[in-house]
Amino acid sequence: EATALPRRNAGDAERPAAVPAVPPSLAVTGQLGNVMKESSQIALLVARRQLQSRKQSGFFEEHELFLHCPEGATPKDGPSAGVTMTTALLSLALEKPIPTDLAMTGEVSLNGKVLAVGGIKEKTIAARRAGCKTLVFPEANRRDYDELPKYLQDGLTVHFATHFDEVFDVAFAEKVPEQ
Image (tube, rainbow, N blue to C red; front, side):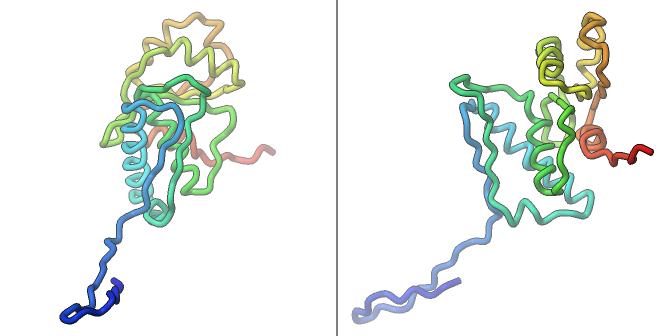
């Protein structure tokens, strides 16, 4: 709280000015629709809960966050980046990079459930083109993946998640050094 000192006229008094302590915000930029903006807020909520459950909270309350989703002039609107946004936020907070050959998709709910998305074939093809060897999909999309041609599945390690905890375990797995 600070005290404002107004120019004194007869009867003017000092005026206390209070600024409420609120956690820093998350700014989202890029060609995003309303659903993606809502997904980013849910991702932040789930990421905060993940840190709290691991006794590592505090980061999100102390830092301004900016999440940019580039893609030129292609508007993005859909919930399927929820697990990816949550993982990116946690990577920043934990100062742990995500493996570069890991790709993921899935809507994340307020309580951390990983929900089904569309386009599993197209997302698998995109992951292969990007050189990703490990994928995380919603458990509810297992059948969609299993129905893909074998040549699209070859060489991939795929994990299926029902809750973000499972995504976390894949994304932040402790690597055992090779001997």
